[in-house]
Image 1: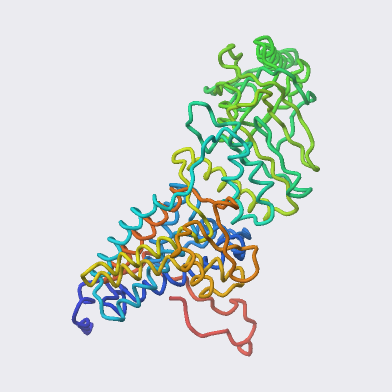
Image 2: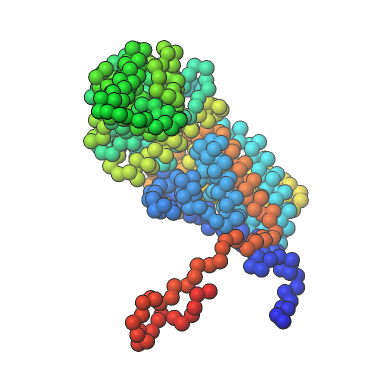
Amino acid sequence: MALHVPKAPGFAQMLKDGAKHYSGLEEAIFRNIKACKELSQTTRTAYGPNGMNKMVINHLEKLFVTNDAATILRELEVQHPAAKMIVMASHMQEQEVGDGTNFVLVFAGALMEQAEELLRMGLSVSEIIEGYEQACKKALEILPDCVCSSAKNLHDVNEATSLIRTAVMSKQYGNEDFLANLIAKACVSVFPESGNFNVDNVRVCKILGCGVTASNVLHGMVFKKEAEGDVTSVKDAKIAVFSCPFDCMVTETKGTVLINNAQELMDFSKGEEDMMEAQVKAIKEAGASVVVTGGKVADMALHYANKYKLMVVRLNSKWDLRRLCKTVGAVALPRMMAPTPEEMGHCDSVYLTEVGDTQVVVFKHEKEDGAISTVVIRGSTDNLMDDIERAVDDGVNTFKVLVRDKRLVPGAGATEIELARQITSYGESCPGLEQYSIKKYGEAFEILPRALAENSGVKGNELISKLYSAHHEGNKTMGFDIEGDGPALKDMLEVGILEPYLVKYWGIKLATNAAITVLRVDQIIMAKPAGGPSAPKQRGHWDKDGWDEAPDSFETHH
């Protein structure tokens, strides 16, 4: 009879074998805080214009070289449950405002670090959380006072450029003026008078070759595809869009055809050809001059398309097909048939052109405010273009945020120091134990200007004391001057380094929520991960000739 081995008493008794649990201050809370600190230190060096790039190779062996925190985290696939919460907060920031993901990480990490000090001092977790919540509320009350200007007219390209510049600067330092201008042009051209702006209306098309400065903006769509037929350019095009392959219809029912003699065979294949020709002819007669298809193009169909001078473009992605329909105002037809005038789209010119050595098809609108504009990015390597694409995304999102709320706060650490100063003095006036955590919350804001300074190779402490003294004199818009030598200050309102109010608002809110959620955890219980038995161990080669070639190990298969 098998010997009954009693389990260790306590909590482990209730769980299955292989479950882990950590509880209490030391095991759970400090462990979580440590994980979050590590995570925020990783991305902290990528904060700001002088931030370093990270090289991330994801599970599919794709290489990313970027300093965009959201991308780094998305590709890292963080496993630790507490660190995952902070990653989620930064994803929320990405979805909510599209920029400031690194702000969330760095700030949440700083809050955790301060919480650790408080816990070591002997405060209880609930007091820290209460203090943090009060301080967060206070910070969001103070934030509107930091607003130094607001966007007046977003239909003006120059103004939009100056506002987008800050967001682009932290991703592409050096090219920010050029890129911000491109993005502003693209955004303004698709920003309707009614005032609702859709981020999806600005597309990005990356084409290798040339330099960044050869990038440009087109009204309409650009696809990295070649035209299928002989016709390569059409002016004033009527466009028929099919979401099916451009081929003859295969019937649903299976049928067997009995052919008695050669003549019937000739007639049979000819009938198919005639049918194809009739279909293409019908499309042409409906007035269409361009056919866009979502599937493969049959040789026969292409032959007739060339005969009737139809331009054929094939788009593989459903997404692009839908986008195109929206741009030209067409309806995607599910089967090969002649479109009605309402179902056809219209576009001023469709032409095939070469950019670098890549063939592209351009659907161009002459009128300025098209439904969609495309930023054509040129660059010497794929990684560089991917990074510029992220900068463009951030710029477009900044524009969207400003459409929602036009208020702006000064950048470069000016807002953070102002908040830190006011929250610390608010903490002094609070009677209870939470005053400690309120003061620490204020201190946590210092980490952002400090990260900016350290990434630029300036001593953090020196800069922060300078910033504080400037802010105590009432200069609320003084921030760190990255281009100055040493810890130099500059008025951010004058040099135009401004950030949207909502980016900071959501960043503070989400980072605090994430930090509080992590602190509220006092036990981690992990069930045994699901999964089959482990793979059998490899034995020596089965085809051993003699005993002198000893197998690698004598164990049998389990």
